[in-house]
Image (tube, rainbow, N blue to C red; front, top):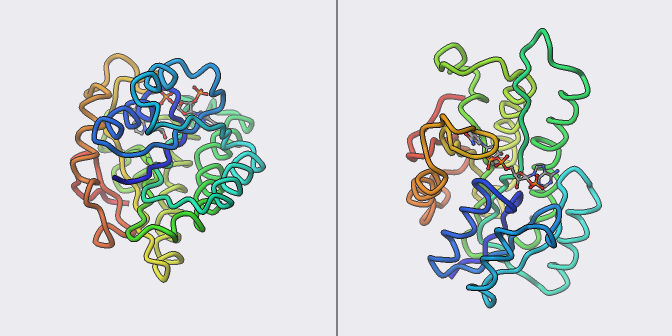
Length: 234
Ligand SMILES: NC(=O)c1ccc[n+]([C@@H]2O[C@H](COP(=O)([O-])OP(=O)(O)OC[C@H]3O[C@@H](n4cnc5c(N)ncnc54)[C@H](OP(=O)(O)O)[C@@H]3O)[C@@H](O)[C@H]2O)c1
């Protein structure tokens, strides 16, 4: 049994990730902005009361992640897998995207991911095989630009490219502690973000990802992979 911490677990990929990991017998620290309103998580707790904790984290608020992890630290918690998943999008293109949207999306998708990862390090270091998955996107691949039919989400694309750099740098900086850090794209998924035309159901996407992550270790350190486990170009 692993202890897995998820951000953005209230709905979409984060909620399904939580559900499938609970089904596999893991212990979940599912974080979200409003635990009292997280209906999907509250429903899961009816079946998995012993394995599921629902905890507050707003990744935009620096104090929020720090508070949670200092509480976990006090209990000497060990975290085997951090699923750094919380994210937002805006589809505006280069001509229309506002500076406010650029800043907001960076704050959640990049700064938020960094704050959570940094605060989690003491708990990750207690694990024998700690892994951090930064949930990225093919839209963050500079090399794939022009090769996908989707485009124009300027702030989002830049944020996921920056998140990939965060992955690469963290994979180098945290290697001495044995912490594996990778970026994974979940594919195009039918969630609030992905919309109803997307290729994968949320169940398929998470099953695919888990298939390639269950035994993840240092061989994936600093890699950018798709939902199928195949490496993606940066
Ligand atoms: N769906 C796709 O096709 C797709 C493709 C590539 C990558 N991704 C990535 O996959 C991840 C999950 O996306 P999704 O499709 O599941 O999106 P979603 O259905 O829109 O869910 C987004 C999740 O992020 C949470 N969140 C947003 N801002 C937050 C904040 N400040 N603090 C904490 N949580 C916050 C939301 O919480 P609230 O309920 O409180 O709003 C929600 O739980 C994202 O990083 C996204 O970029 C998705």
